[in-house]
Image (cartoon, rainbow, N blue to C red; front, side, top):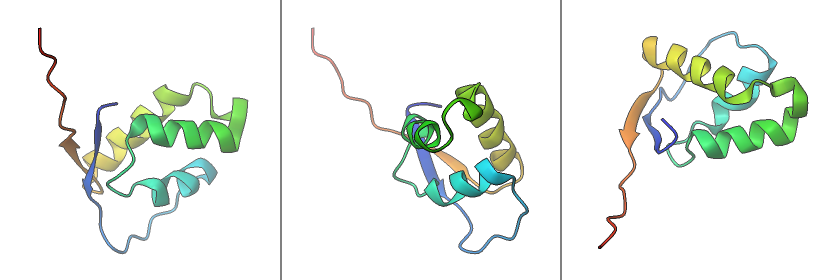
Length: 81
């Protein structure tokens, strides 16, 4: 998941989210990946975000399961030997 970003999310969404979810949802923009979002969450919430990536993974699994996001693969750079 760390090497992926989001291809789409609904233009308008009405869902009750907890405080961290309210911060994260606008960051889901198709440009940022899970690592980028995690860094912003850590900056905003500090220790209160821990265990950060476990919580983010569960949050994004829930969004995907409910059809709020679709994952896209990031292009990888080939390494010549």
